[in-house]
Image (cartoon, rainbow over all chains, first blue to last red; front, top):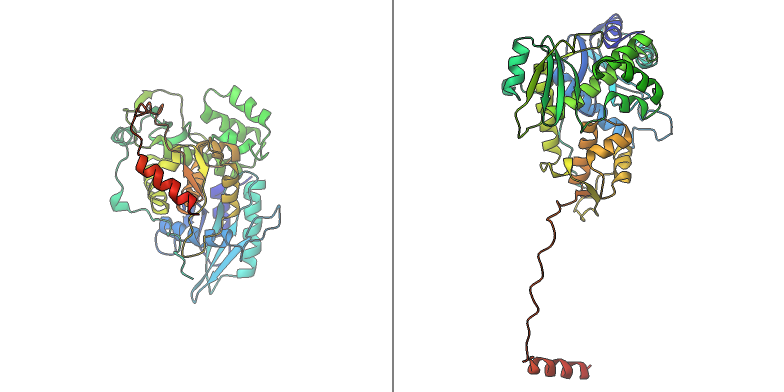
Length: 127
Length: 269
């Protein structure tokens, strides 16, 4: 069963992966990080990505209210150079974490990464 | 409609990273192993790294794992009873394979940073360190002292930006009617609603966190946001028994003129 580091290293094997982190969106803490950070610093990236994740998770426009489902599944931000994929991790205990994967736009495959990251998020906490 | 956006999560300022406890800094430098007991919590150090933290103000790993049925209470009690110290109970769980590794690592780190925040809170008494071979670097992740200190400072700053008065962190909380504001009140999020529904004039933020099986710091974030929105307030500290009322003045000279004016006014209605 993979731990946090194994999960992040697995994410880094996706084509075009530049960096990956597990982040708590309430505090902005990176609980684990590998590879490059978008701004050169994983702590800053974690705090900024957490702010985006929190806005999506806490606002009715984006969050589902169906019982038993996490409020948001994932967030995608694209720019001219790269993709950011934020996958919320649905834990059976109370937590507020997401996986943040940073992909180069040229080599990255967003659709594949989205499917794989969802599987990794599930395996991380479900085994 | 003018809305003040919530403040951004603070970013750690490396230049401002200062030691919260000079004793802890020294212990990290000498790669000490043992248990640091401070006023609001305990840090377990192995070779200068934090392997476990406890605080009466933060729910422990057992509470976090059992509150929502991730782990049966009996399974946690068994692991805790067999382990020589609480830090090893989590390792026993890991070995037994009852929980996925990632889930346990995540919950362990959540609990460590949560209790560590309170253990490093300013205290009025000096900390005591007991050198000993108890704690050790195990299979679960450990955290460098400086990382825990920086994160604790960042969390203090985050709470301060949400609402600068720390009174609601430790006092019993009561519900309040938000004062009418020029802008519509920010909606209460589902997580805040769960906190708000349990505010009863008796329970503190730490009690609410335990009730909800939630990290205490996460609960403080919601408590400070709800306080800032005027929806809850700390119960003022009990000032003790009220002072005895002053003796009633004895007078034999009531103000006849005032009574007459009052009677005239009533009759004129």
